[in-house]
Image (cartoon, rainbow, N blue to C red; front, side, top):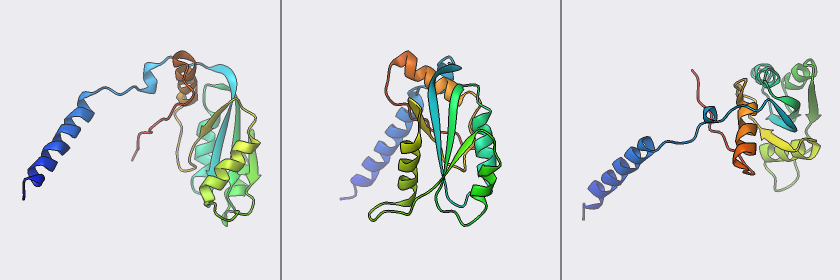
Length: 158
């Protein structure tokens, strides 16, 4: 009856080896495209006064243009909105009341999506920082590979 413990362990090891043995595509594998379609970057933020300035500045520092940055303030009780208002080149949307059946972040994302003018959309969390070539390389993947969606798993920094 205890045969399943070694079997589960063997499966775990096999998956671990497979994960590290197979090469996953990286954004660095594609050349950056520094211009093209308008990219709307949507940042949902709730009580992110500590993070929002650095997040938005990292987006604005990107090599890609044209670009619009939309921060959806999800009814923050801190200085998130005030900080965003001081940043040039950023649209601040004050989040509407949460409809029944919705969750906060998803509702903020939908509001940003509805306000976006870009042909391409990038959704980022307010507590992240973007590499200067992130958008240019993601657009490079979209155009080179002719795909409709690029999902990026970020690297955590300490």
